[in-house]
Image (tube, rainbow, N blue to C red):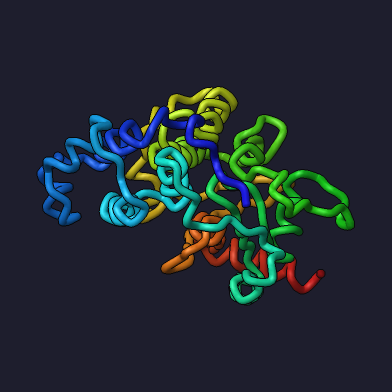
Length: 278
């Protein structure tokens, strides 16, 4: 099982608790009221005068809506073993989850769909997504697309030699993608991989996180489209993000299924035509 070491983010449990309470905007009184733990005890925990039990840490994790990965970090910081496992997708215990994801990916055809982890590393994809990315990146039709987490979808999108040259509204899309990873960085805590990725993406895009205001008048659409142009083809897409409910595994908790949908009939017709040629 892979988990972060406690000193990667926090010096001790008290620092972690202070960080997460502040991040969620809770006063000690509010945290006391919602958790059923006395305000005095919370104060002692944050000053290091009291040590938490394993059960208390798990309760605080629920009340403060701390990501499962970070609850493990807090447990380690307090001297306890992690409570939530982090399995590989090929683990037999995740077979039902993988089958569900395979089903959803298949149902999305003829439109693309991806499964990514919390840092938007590619984990799974359907055939329309594979063909779509190969077309955009001028890859051979028989070239494999790695699904081992080595391909980062955000980097691929924002890189000057990636999808960016074909995105007519790449600055707006880039700002929107930075918002996603910025939220992840805020949830992870200081010194995290998400924070490092945010800095890398911001530099790559040449944008400040949140620095591009959305154009709310653009075609009066209720969403930000991906406006793509390549080889005389113009496509307008939007995406939805699906997460898995009530997870008790770090990997499952962090998976995201991103499904692409056409924003107009011309885009839908193009994908249907591509499916007939495969």
